[in-house]
Amino acid sequence: MKYIRNIFFLILLLGSLNTFAQTDNLTRAYNSMQKGNADSARIYIDKAVQESANKKDPQTWYLRGFIYKEEYKKYESNNIRSGLRDTSVNDLFISYRIDSSHDNKEATFSTLKYLAATYYNDAASNMDSVHFHQAMHAYNKHKMIMKKISTSNFNALDVQFYDALGEIYSGYFFSAPLFETKRKFLDSARKAYDAVLAINPDDFSANYGLGRLYYNQAVNIITNLPVDAGIPEVNKAQDTCAHLARLSLPYLDKAHKLEPLKIEPVKGLEGDYYMLHDSEKFQVNKDLEEKIRQQQSPKK
Amino acid sequence: MKKIFIVFSFLTLLSVSAFGQFEQTVAKIKVAFIYNFTRLIEWPPDYKQGEFVIGVLNGSPALLTELNSLAQKKIGNQQITIKNFKSVDEVNKCNILFIPEASNNMLAEALKKIHGTSTLLITESEGDVKKGSAINFIVKDNKQAFELNKANAEKNHLTVSSSLKTLAATYFEQ
Image (cartoon, each protein chain N blue to C red):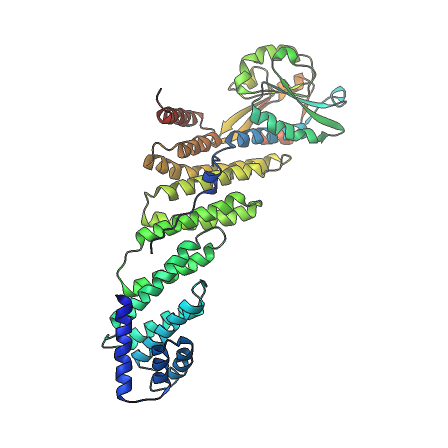
């Protein structure tokens, strides 16, 4: 339906141009598009937008945006950093901005929504440990467009996105061989999970993810301690370890409250209290772990 | 627009718990302390020959793993050897004997066994430093720390460096 509407809009524009029987670059661009020759249309429209008569014409910019969208579909639909797509979006926004009557609004927004969807799909399909920077780029583009053309609430989507990003950075944190590198990925993961918790403080994944990161960094501090470290160095490592265990506790506690039957947060609490030498609370959580295991085991 | 952002945790995929190793961390701290004691306490000449033996009474797997990491090291010319004794009867000449809290019921027997030797006795139960132990691990401010009883060390002909005294959480002359 949207496609038909876009075509209808183009026909209207074409009709108005034919009325004046123009043979300038703009008309040539329309004519080329009508013949399905987007490559040729692109050459003419690039010239047309340079002409002073067209610079403030919303229809010219809409046509350019439309042509670049077609070119994107033809040549760069697999390129997440497609310049053709970016140009199309940019031109469509220019068209909307200078179109005081907003006559083109529906067609412009329809095309922008299509492009926003392509960014979204690129973000989703690139959300993995190798391409996640591309995914972030595409997701931000999607949001930028949708925020301008709709009143969509991105909270639910942001939670999903940043949870996934936190998990990717956590994966790098766990697999990084060097302590300094781990610290860097911990920081990136923390920022992603913080973004989730700013929207939804009761998000299990973010609470669990943060508690798990701090716990494991505490373990790493001690694991990386040279066995011949002097006592002052050992004490300094213990201070850092205790600090991280304390940071971990409220997140794992929250994760446990959110998902009381999950064992992992309870195991994390056990570990935190063990590292803090709090044998009483360690035992409480160890007993709780056992209780959960019994509840989960099949009844005989 | 149907896709959603899903990333499977690689820990989940590998079925690995994210919360292991906590016993190892505490054991490692104790072992780091024990290694420091070897450098800040001096043994008499007859204990500076042969292997430098660190014995433990029923050490936990985590503790033994960490202690075994010392086995590559030397104290002076002495190669460190780790021995895990199942009972006090098994205890023979060692430079250090560590009695973990779970084996503390063997303290009195162990004290008799090492009487007159130059074994540094390390424990980790409240009050042990007043029962004959030279060094007793304690927890202070959520951290592993230790008490030092100079007299108990000197009874076994061990010389305690002044710096170890300052590093102890509690120091007893007698």
